[in-house]
Image (cartoon, rainbow, N blue to C red; front, side, top):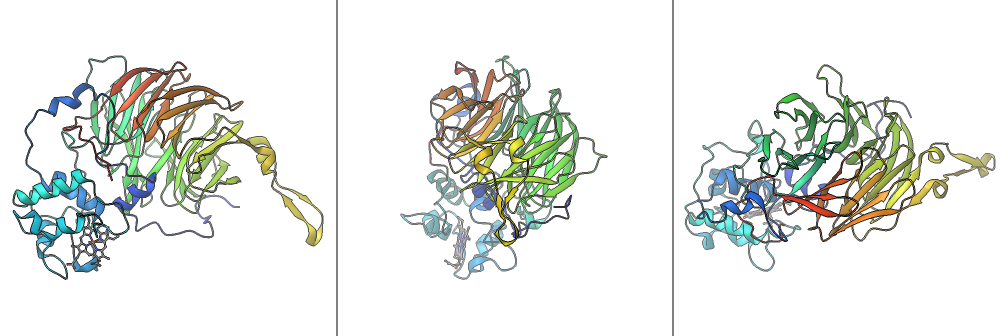
Length: 499
Ligand code: HEC
């Protein structure tokens, strides 16, 4: 195959229609946002707001995010379903083919509540029903008179520049979509919806520093190899991918770069710290230099979302994996595909490499190593003429680790690339030595699902980001819990299913 972005895989599907709700649903096959069960103790400032009286429900801050996530993708645009547009309070009052969506002050008479309540709510169709907590919030908004604090202007992406609302205090625990550790394991960065939270792990008294971004949802945070810069990436679904390079010292932006027209997912700094390789919803790997003057390059290597990318320690190759179930090795400079090393029965969510083995994991509950040298040594052919049979050598270069208890959602390599930590839809983090695939540590009783993981340079500290809004830091290999952090202020520790 030839180089660069002109290479298009045969069966690409268009991604331009990705909207927030769908992006999230599919991203890790589970909802990243919303209320969820928080097991165990909620420390630090999570409790401080519990005593506060129930505040008034805001359309802009509370109602719109729910509608946007669960309804708006079908109830917007020029031909909304059922004739019902939900871009603004005025649209909802106007309603659809069968009349207004709500009656102010009367939640029980409002169709908004009727269609999302009961044993089998009719909306959203073919999706899990809204969490009781969200239904309750909509109810309270209607009961309070359905006040419109949007300033009258629609908040949806179609209506102008996207607005990212970052609450001072979150109503529900917000999932930790990504965590990162500095090489020395002392500094931590966590992605919570649209903000990055920075903190010193050993300084319990220092408050977390919150840095807002314009991304609808951050999907990846990572420290540069020298620890001075943090990359935070994500984007606006259907609009653009974005990476913000931030100084750890003061949270200031070094550069903000946009690439493509859809969300960017996870990836990895190049070993020299000069560029970031990220997977995209457009099926491409995006190579994004920190230097704003240097050109961004895209390599269309996959036929569907690229979920993760990892550079080899020498920077000469990178491994990528994605929703097309493929694991691929490509040239780190030119982006030329060197080898599609495997096709998994299910989506690949995470990849890693130590330069000797590529490792990939995902929904199929498998963790597989691929010997680079054998995999890249080419395809042998036996026989001749019409009888020629390619030999894939797959069984020669494929080195499975032990099976995983459930879907894997993230994998993190230590800075020295000797270890990988693996976790997902199960309450355990397993740590393996890449070289011999042996498990060297296990951390049990971690609140699942686990959305994100990070290891420091030597693999002596592990950070875990949970769906329930906690970041947990452990010492390895003992698995001793050092700190539990709720990085953003949360009003309530209510328990719900988070759908
Ligand atoms: C996947 C697409 C989709 C999503 C998401 C969705 N709807 Fe619908 N909705 C439809 C379709 C299709 C119809 C028309 C057919 C029908 O009435 O079943 C409809 C009709 C409706 C109607 C009736 C409109 C009228 O006046 O006849 C209401 C009310 C409604 N939806 C509310 C909601 C709410 C509230 C949400 C979010 C909780 C939501 N919908 C999410 C597809 C969707």
